[in-house]
Length: 262
Image: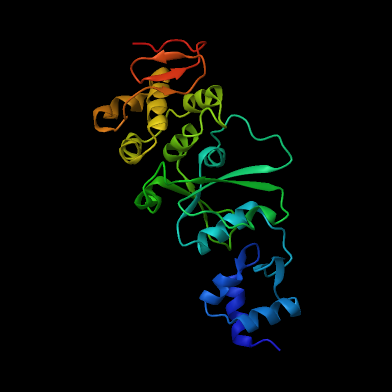
């Protein structure tokens, strides 16, 4: 028999649609013997060794990430292209069988994350070379999606933060063309947030490319920024093979791109 009080505790710790690890359950006052018995009795469903859900409900990627955000010691956010998609600002979605979800954290993701048997691949991005740890705790750069009435909200990067995360992946996994299309649609960004993010961001490439694209599309918020206050590093950054050098921002860009106005 399972202890009634522990069963009640278990229901509160793992609402339907979320998952939890054995380690986290133990840290939240459930003893290993109870957890093992809950698995044997079918009260807990084992997804992978040490990873459980409480009911055989459909497991969605948002439930997995929301669970991570509850359990991880370091903040983990949906960011980059996925965050822009959540705001309806991405121009085309992945057409593959697997949904690609971009996760950002200073800590590595657990090894079981891509072994849960759902139609999602989680792409991990370390924030150590783009954001200071303190910024990852700042809610003003995040948005929330209430994706289920009875479950915690999903936290994801606001558009200002997400765009810099996208640009950090140009040209490796994001093309110049896609980045250009994304920036074209970002006419309503908050200059106050952009200013704070450009001061905090440690990716020289992302900051230079952000400014180049912002000037290319001449967004109204651009005039409220303070480029002299941002660290753009030194030396040339080759972002496009056999591209042309933009002398102002010292980056190579595709030759077919029209010169900036002004």
